[in-house]
View (cartoon, rainbow, N blue to C red):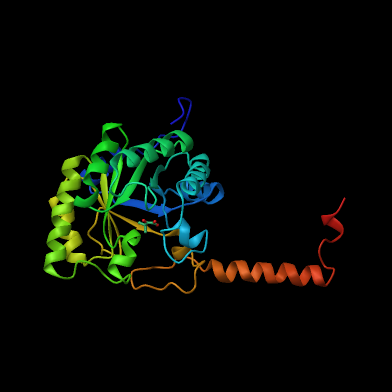
Length: 271
Ligand code: KIV
């Protein structure tokens, strides 16, 4: 936060207070300056520079290919557009699994080069050393359990996770482990609503759900999905708040037609 800033920045402490006051937390993904400004001005509490940038910005099939440099580029752009929202950045695949020193080094690059306010990483017990080491540097960490897209080749599908008791039990244990380690919040992705409710009740820190039902302390969606830019992605949990596919293709078709018909520019649109 700039010392001269007139807008009060949301912090992880604000999120904690929101949980205590039963005020829901709104989170959306953002990847660039212009949309970050719009989402920030519309009142989104947390902007997540998700590694879903790999899918929606770069067109990859999974989140695995995106690089640390690319995440830093997106995150720095988002930070420049966000005055009030807390900006959290995903640590990309390969930069924290099995190497807590690399996890901290990658986090420090993100924090120094982007001005973001915290990081998120996927997994529980397997990555707890990385979580702990990052926290020693005083950087807020958000955990991510349930469907963790960086492990897609282990799961084999993007189906609902933790429907079986053994996996649900591991998720409950991982959630407590992450809270005890000092995480500021947890994202719970695509798990049964009842499990998300139980985990949310068992934790002091806030949970933020995607496809995890209504009982989490907040909700997150991928911006491109909720604005209807993607037409193919239609999971049950997604609510589309706009149809930007139709708006944008309609506007662009009109522009193309005006250019072809020498209808643009007109008398007033020239010098
Ligand atoms: O990368 C991402 O967009 C995410 C959200 C789906 C939570 O991790």
